[in-house]
Length: 365
Image (cartoon, rainbow, N blue to C red; front, side, top):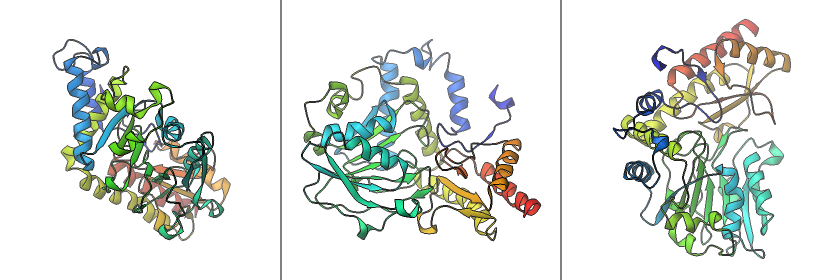
């Protein structure tokens, strides 16, 4: 039983930690979902029992994020990686330009896909500075006839995050929020389209959420495959084909958990407290630990840092693993260390890691 297990100190970047209460409820309902005599995984996606799960998840997301009525909430598949191509396929014509704000590896991947369909260009880039910060609003370049402006709200690999979002006049703003959606309040109405893989703050892998303004749907290209049209999924309440029913059920339970805690403002408070524990260990180390991101661009979700030499870093990661801290290696493309402190990562886990960092410095400094 899950109560008898020793829970890991899970800092995985994704799939990531899920709330223990949600896992327990899923365990209880796994074989007999609410008296149906079936698991939720066995329900028809056309059944009344599943329809209630599906619609409640949509309603909870609208409530928690204060999504205006002129937006559709879609449950898609293929992760954010499919969205990288689906967006230009729907909204970028061959002769059009689109502005991409380059803040890390995921914006690079999105930009590469857009090049297959039109003429994307860099609205701004912090690559020359090793993606240590988010561009200033005044650095963003775009044209009023661009198809859209695209940004990545949080960068898991480099540990940077937009603290606020620009107002883009006359051009649709699109945001990849895969790694920080539901972690803090923001103004949805600044965006024409928001997309996010579920596997960091919303639920298990396999579900992708898209929040799309209805007027943008009306402008979409039509000469594309049916399954790759946002309008297909909007017209069918994300039930055109068989959706990832268990993933959507879990997503709904995570949303219920957030609501039960007090909503997004309480989650934000918790995330700030958790991140502070680890950032304090870095900032008070007198250079023993060095954060990658500039302080004004630091992420509350992914805390990235290095130690003063590679051998010491290897020792740190080995000892962290021995102490039960999972997923603290940096992304394979950049190395270093990373603690991903998503919504479901407990305060106690971050406190234990902070104390480990201090102890390691005292022993090896």
